[in-house]
Image (cartoon, rainbow, N blue to C red; front, side):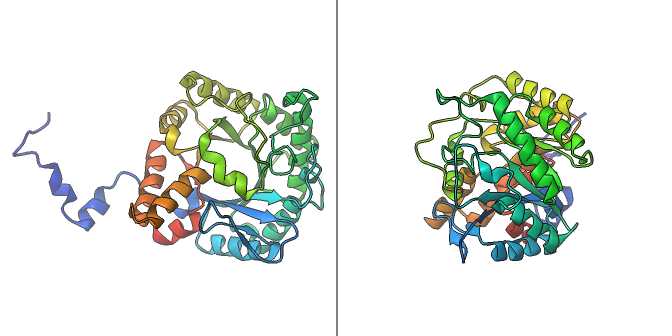
Length: 327
């Protein structure tokens, strides 16, 4: 039974800030937020990322300060992206014990310990000179199975450096199973995997590619990332495969343009679901706010609430530390 106007007046519960706070249906909490951070080898001071106002490529020292701050405000975790000084077609820096990502992992773990979950991106695009997520064949295609071997070696190197979660993002078939087997064989059966399971060949990654200094002519990733216009069933199939291979957490990326996918994933899987509010989403809000076209703080909060409401248990966002102070 439902009442009608004038007996029913939904505005009664919206009248004051206290009433709205009392009945709000979606809340953000710092422990649900993960901060992506960039660290570059060989620089002596942080370098601003031009297309991402407020975001920098960190030095190892400034990274320590950033993660200490993240721990102080109660974030759930940090995701490291290492940018080596030298890149090659094999991604040698990916599993080098002295590579920038492994050095940064050791730095961060020593700085914050168990105060938050420390992880790093497990992919080759930041460390290869061609900018693709895997090893290329002579014809220029990504070799799926050869790439799996690199991912396993990279994952084990990250775990040895102290990574508390492995995060494969390359969308190679079988990547979760290969990494799970490799971690287990190396004595890291306790390390969980957060799989980028439904990752789309999106136009919203552009600023990120500036941040990791990706070559501009790398082409596209439509042969291995999902088609933005693809069926929902494709995403759900990827989720099921990753969970069957041992994924402990699954992810949808990007977030805002794929809230329908996020909702479907949340409704059909029992493991925690993450969503990545990517660089393009960040840059659009910052640019519009800088021009006075939108209210920056409200737009940031509204975007994150939408992602949470759609079903994300965890959100990767470049505003994580800022939001933790506000919620």
